[in-house]
Image (cartoon, rainbow, N blue to C red; front, side, top):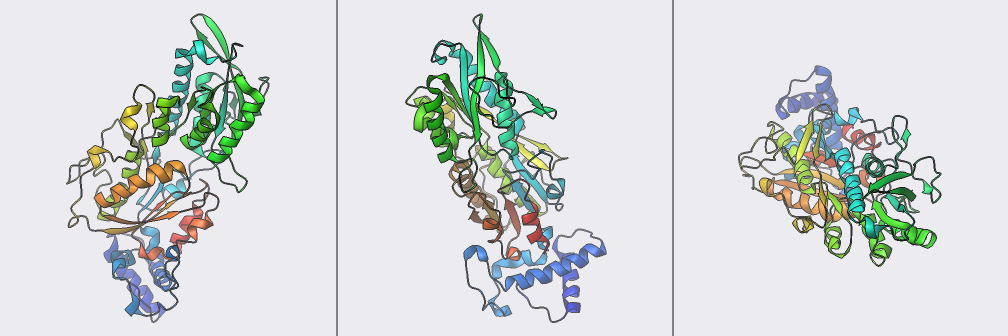
Length: 461
């Protein structure tokens, strides 16, 4: 509810009263004082309008203009509202160390993603198994060297780092750096002398083959966007012109880049390409020679992203509808997700998608049947959520994840505003969170994993 406060004394008194009846949690006096100030700021923010909608709200200056849908959101300070980070785990992009300040921003803060290391191992194993099973035809020029090129999504993204490491570990090309596998791009490495990788080997039917990473690079476009499919398509054009039939396998950190390379070159040249995400187009392309992909159970991730917000908004056990059945019968089995309490993080588990099982994954936007039951709105009233996608053009997030979220938001009685970013700057997103007071909860997908403060600073105002 939009209100004007006549004096600082009234603001403090009303803030204390509202916090007391909002979350019901016992808070130190200092926290209550901060909450009162936040409520005053939130009320002032209400007079600026919602920049996400691009409205000119300069005339919203009286209580008569208040939005009745804001309801309970005005009773809780923005800093105390449920928050879920998803897809990009708050962390140091150089070291991978988790940003625990962001992950513990308040008592209702969580992260939802997938088990990156388990998925990376699956992808690497999938590629190695394919090479071994097709050794008679995969060495295209018969030189005894299995050459592969690698499309790296974002050198500062934990998931990208894990996938690069998973490929190199499985194929024996990994080199240790600072106690872990080096995930740096090598540029070109046709002579096998780059220090970031080494030559690996595979023995099949008594014959040994050298495995070499011929080239790898971060797929970053001139504007700064990473995981860029067009850049990957251009890269395979350059690599194929330079290396020709030395390229026996293509590995990619995601399907968007993988499919760009597949369509640009590898499909016509019968070179298996392996991606990640199980996007519908990539799964369908397996019938046409795409080597395989990894399903990160986006259906489970999307459900968890909104489910933890729903539970926090309802003030019920966070495990409800996850490990414990809710009142509609929704529940997840332990073989599709894991929860790490120390990291405040839910991780979906991954599944390899190959020629053997791809027909089971043709619709990437189909919701997960065990959690498809509608919640009773009388027991779980509608709440308003602000949710952003870091890049509106990202193939996985826009074509798979967001459609799944939009299916689940109805089931969970959540009114979600979806904000698409440009994939390059946080400000392109944060500038459209001009009025957080009108929302009950937030789901944030950062451009860069280091930049959680860009969002928490807005909620702390």
